[in-house]
Length: 190
Image (tube, rainbow, N blue to C red; front, side, top):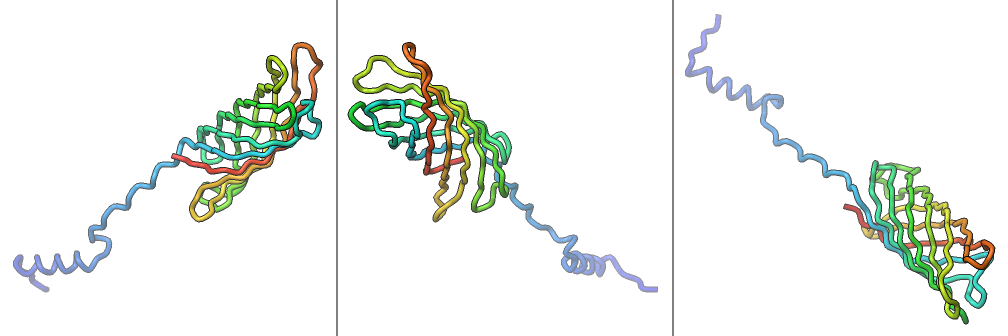
């Protein structure tokens, strides 16, 4: 039988503790960063109206769009959109667009380099045309396919959409103001 004195046991126990990885102290891993809950998309757009209801205005024009998104889950967002667009020509048209959008990611998760999504929007347009008094209002249902991606670590998005829209004014029957739109811009989340 082996007899160990207490003076000899302490170095033996320390040697065993140092040799055992299970007993060694390790620093705790840092907690993962919380997922973002908000995002802001700002982009330049180009629109084209196949059946232009605005006499004297071009059927295509530029604009700027901003969407403030509430990221409810990693795959679903609710957004508030605001835009300003123009159609140039003899009787130029200025449009203010606003409303709500629902966005659903359809591809890989949040860490993927390319993240496609589908978006549905219920928007309202207020259009003013030079040479005319008052404004016309259009209600708009938009269907969008887009993708979030990064170029040299700059977060970007690209969207292509078709909006079903009817323009109404007090003295006219509703006219089709449906349009196709392409948007390219930056997306910032926090």
